[in-house]
Amino acid sequence: MPIYEIGVYNVLARKYVRAGKDIPKHINVSPDFENVIYLERWADSESDARVRIEREFPLSSGYVIDYLKKVSG
Image (cartoon, rainbow, N blue to C red; front, side, top):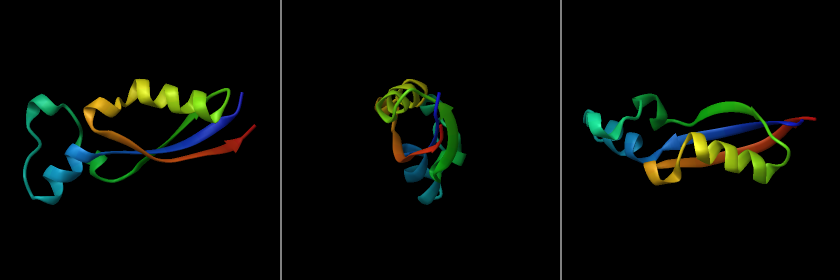
């Protein structure tokens, strides 16, 4: 199964951190996600990788997939 490198950030974390404010507890996101975080995930295809990462980092919670590239397999 191929490995994909995926870059994810969170628009809410970015908004609060760049404004110099603390992220409210109810948002439940690490300030680390102000910047793009790169992860590797096994997936059958690019679309499968996207589905898997969207389950882990929901778009409805402010996450954005900034980068997606097949790196092996």
